[in-house]
Length: 463
Image 1 (cartoon, rainbow, N blue to C red):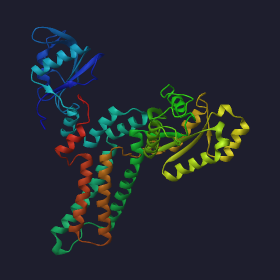
Image 2: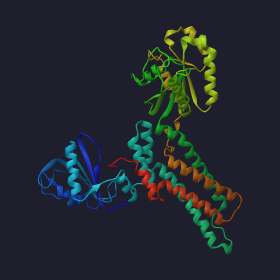
Image 3: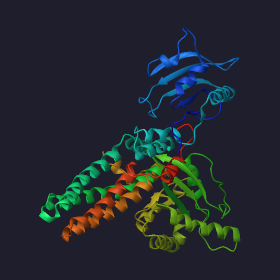
Image 4: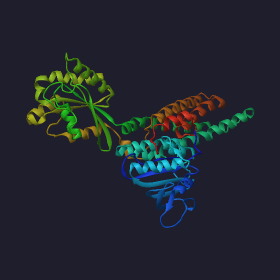
């Protein structure tokens, strides 16, 4: 990886806007910008200006003034990348953006790769690897909850917890290693009882972090919710009511939805991915039967299943509908199931009470009239437990971190077994080093070019 040259890229989104920001970073960033900048009031040189200063002037090529710009100067190491950095705020014309980029490339900069600014920040010690990954999560956050988790990680909450465990383990590992140097004297520098307490503490912390991934993954990627039921019970109408738009085709003809339709909404800061599925019934229609097969696939993928029934037809079909609910519960015991009675505006209060006796957990709504939708969304919020987000606990959202934590816990468990079995220090050291290795993978103290390439390839250009 080349990290000693000067790079340039558009830092704002591509396309026309009020303004655009072009970022230059590297050893020649200020010199290159200086060649193209002419101050409005004084004949100042950017190279002579202090860090964290703003300068109004014109950006010029050899012959023409391209735009009036505002230039920000950041001198190393006090910048995002830890290098000399210049940000040029220009007007948002695509033509102006491209002209400025072309001039800077001609002056010696090169186009930045995806995530190269954040990669340089990591290499120059401005961020550790988990904080760098949080930058991508922050950019991608589309709800209050996912934003909150990304900010917590970018501020170093997760890194600090891992680093603290690692430092405590390193201290004991050093004492165990010291014992090996004095093996003939048969001395014990590492207090085994204290070591056992530390290992128990690390095990507890790792288990908590591993368990938090279930919540973190939901917040980061959204909660998949499958809407299922017989044809023509109002699944598409419910989806439209939840989304507050006509997203799915609604018709009195049974089997209108022949494929799955998906869309997202945010409820109480959490993203829910609703999936309107084909109606479940026996059919000879080949296309519809494929849709029904997909319905069962989507139930498998969902975390929450909404089973929708028609309250008008319940009396005539009660045994069949209750059997279908039982089938879903037995076939997918791990899924959270919400049973909804639709078209409640067409039945009497007495009929509603009779339904409740038959199915106590039933929630009655009218998707067409958008009545009872709030009751449904409240139930969803209760089922998807994100209570850990309300306190200062660290929540893991990254699958790479989750994998490393699992492997670290496996090695720590081996250390615990070794302590109980009173094995020698040299054998304990092997498992301790392996645990330290996986801790280092999370924070980036141990990296490879392949690992960094995989992580930063998902970043956007300019970040």
